[in-house]
Image (cartoon, rainbow, N blue to C red; front, side, top):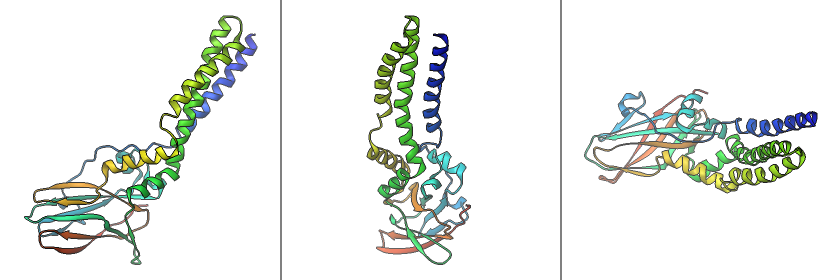
Length: 248
């Protein structure tokens, strides 16, 4: 019986280790608060009628993990941080759909919507790892239940029966815990919610405002960010370009 118990424990260790290894493959998308400086602190800032704007690409692994909890490069997304400060007397509107990444050859790419950004995260290794982690929760629950059941059964002189009972109980608990996030669509919704927490979106910038947020571009080696800024007070548009360099 001792030999059988040892072999059973080896199998349980494998069952527990495999899903835990799956869950550790990639960091989850989890946004956090952002620290920033005023626009004039950045070399590429521009000023129009008292409105100062700076754009900062989040192109390093370290910075992306600090802000988003994961490397959005894996999803083909380049987050760009917009920081604006209105020191003037006029009102402005910034529309994320009027912000573009511009390559050295002049090719322009508009910012992703939140839906499209979330879909790209979902289809990337970030998303597949999140799903694997959910499935792994069910497997871990099954394995742990079997271990507990085996221990109880062993004490009663029947390790096999205890393991089967424990597997059923642990499996039910594991599945309940592991599928709490829901089906695949719920992962996309979760990713969209996280990205929306920090998104710039479409905003009116009033006098004395300091605002910041992110737009999400398709990852590329852009040399500039172009933006159309609407002056609400004067009913005019301003075309701005911000030079930048992508580090990888």
